[in-house]
Length: 445
Image 1 (cartoon, rainbow, N blue to C red):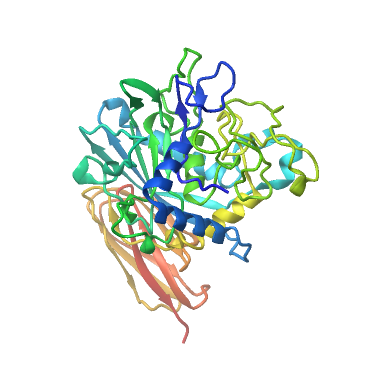
Image 2 (cartoon, one colour; image 1 turned 120 degrees about the vertical axis):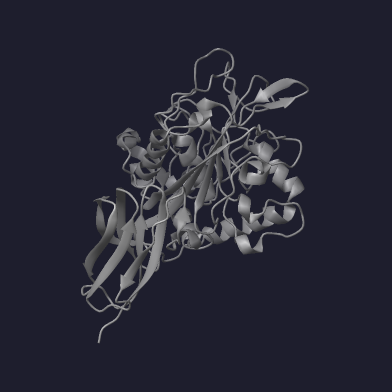
């Protein structure tokens, strides 16, 4: 079983010994990055493998919705790369729909696979948008060891991550084409690190450090309403973009591998490779960015399905057209939730204040501890849209306390804690500029 470190799409004008559809110039280049990690960072590779094997172990996990705070870093050089807020918000909406099986195209899933479709129950909360103008061009050398580390450090022309243990950091930039000897080999559109116990990443071996953990996406495939486009080499049109590239990459961030098991350029493409998930049918290679429902590349799917079933092109972890992707399987959901409540459990914890702009709004709670009524007090320098939520210690919401515009000046909101079970809670205040969290202790008597 091979590990998937990084998911990416490559549009190539060269044949790189990869299996492609006749006449097609689209192929998967994930093997390039897996090769880099296997050869340059063997200890890190072993740690990723061990984490994945642990995530596969069935366990009784919390089935409540899980909330992940997301920071989007827009690192841009040319104006078209500085994506509008509306595009960022659209992408968050796509993530929330696809990870909660609320996407409108769920009905397109073939009846054969309807019983294995899963709802991940993962909600993505946009904690901030960071914009950095740069003179840097971000280029990956597939024959070296650079995994765009400069994108993730302000001092190198990128943007410093927010706390990686508490936030999913997504960097959006223009990823330069892969070239060799002056020839363009292809275009990478995204990659992500799989989960690992960040405190135990191998030291002093040149491996990526925890501050570089997260997802990187080319600006042209971020958001379903993105006006930019990726031209398919050979003049066959533009790549279909529906916001599913980030869905795919976040799947890797939560521990999922490609459904065909990651053979390819540097490994075998055959029906013996597996992604470690029982309910994703075997495939001998990735789809070719199409919607071929007749594709049936392996006949060894009887172990789970008791039948020879076609390839699951509707899965978010394949490389089918974004118009065809519409589901995760229940087995994939189990792995993602195990990861999110295991090595990435810090993402579920309430977060402290993170300031995006110059605004700084603090609030106080009194009395604290509280038994029934308590007051939330704050002072606004200007009219501000404030959303207040109550969270438990697992980061799960107990509901929105208030969400409205408040005028400039001092405010006091009286709240009732009498229906809450005694214990520790967090009150979250969110504006368009910042997130601030305060502890609230509820006790009786």
